Amino acid sequence: MSKHLTMHPSREPAATRFTHTVNNSITHAPCFLGIDGGGTKTHAIITTASYKIIGEGFSGASNPVRVGFDTAVANINQAIKQACEQAHIAPHDIAAGCAAIAGISHPIHYHTMRKALDARLRMDHLELVTDARAALEGALDGRQGIVLIAGTGSIAMGMNEGRQVERSGGWGPTLGDEGSGYDIARQALKAVAASFDGRAPRTLLTERICRELGILSAKDLPGVIYNNEEASTQIASLARLVADAAAEGDAVARQILAQAGRDLGELAVSVIRKLHLESATFRVAYVGSVFKAGECVLEPLRAAVLKAAPRAEVGEPLRSPEIGAVKLAQAAVES
Image (cartoon, rainbow, N blue to C red):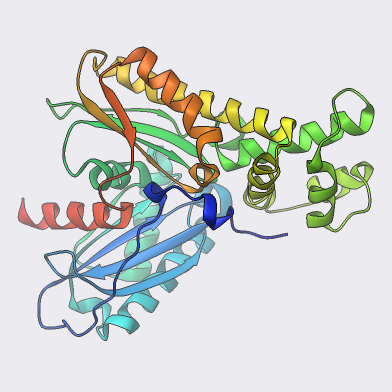
């Protein structure tokens, strides 16, 4: 089963595409490290002080709740190593860095990751924040508003003019993650099972999910799903099949994506209310692979946000989460 939550590129909204031009000819200026680590992949960049990217690296998931701390730290290290090699520098040449990692909002997880990264990377100036915090910094470029992240998991985080920060979601696959890639895929699996039973309509998802999982019939699903040690990450990868089926007019797939959009709208609205932004003008920026499904998700999301805050704008993030992490690294050494 594919481990990457990807959807058809022709339907990917511009908001989730960040085309980084790597210029590794600049090595004499101070270098900064930004890392965005989630439930599917880890992306590291090395930049100058003016955000010119001179190195970039990718690796697997680094959310410790999903893959464990050892695997998470190993993947972070691998992404940094690739970025340093491309930039032609060593890790000790980095002036400061920030690792923005999903799954560390609980103090125990945060401190365990902090200790593990310090032991493995041995960097003097490395900040550790949640992935949502870096996405917020990048998406709004320091202005008030909300960032809504929906990849393998889901979370919303916002900031008002008084610099008050609030969040909603980020509870993981058991307690939450509504509207996430995992939740979309889980709803698709439930729809296939219900269709097999005769409790729900037929759907293109049945044939496509069975083919993706290498099984002949929906009756074989339990043996694949319940015997998978990496179930949440790999199940989330099935969300791309839902987007494909929806684009071809499958009613069940479209309903699943519409519900995801409404759920993500609820996450955003809860943060809007916590920050008292109902009458304000601000941006709700969306980040993550779920939004590659396009208007099937965005239309109900937009409707939910505008009902609560009519002056809000739902649109593209201004900068990527990795650049947001770099900005946080710079701010930490300047303070």
